[in-house]
Length: 110
View 1 (cartoon, rainbow, N blue to C red):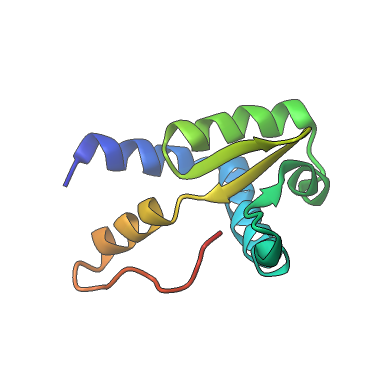
View 2: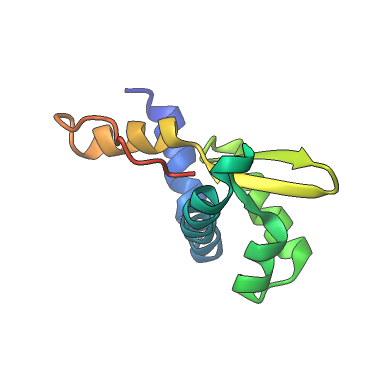
């Protein structure tokens, strides 16, 4: 176990705004993943997350940066838009932290 890595992950999730942002990216990402996988596009649009949270873009940007720095969220620019998705491998790593006998999820976290 890398204690520093897990401390960074848990610290990022300890803020209620970041936790809501992470959950919104997770749920929207999964829904948009199902809708867009035929087009080869994954992740959710950051603007959809901002709209759903009813929080200003600068605030979301700040918290998103913390989630990215912790390795929990990945972002990529597609045209003019920023797409976000939860880092499935990190989520699986956290899952194994709490349940060492668990297997990686076969479901996409998008």
